[in-house]
Length: 100
Image 1 (cartoon, rainbow, N blue to C red):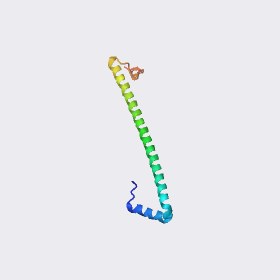
Image 2: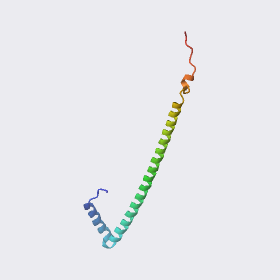
Image 3: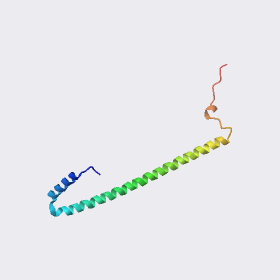
Image 4: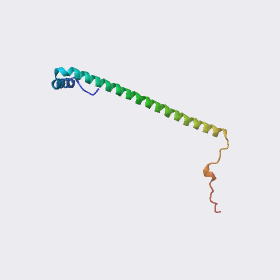
């Protein structure tokens, strides 16, 4: 997971044995294992929550896109049903008189 090989783990174990001694090493290993388990559970829980939230965001985005597509379809249908569309705003502007 972290790219730690057997030789590195062996070195850490030997240093722990020298620092803690043979009496306290099993209790320290048990405590470290408990903390590591708690960390993994917490990390997995947070990861699941984030994935669930990302999934909810994706669903919201899809619903929004579908609503926009529905509005576009309705607009196209209204244009198809109305043979004389209203004039565009540009055609309503006053044009300067032609000099002839």
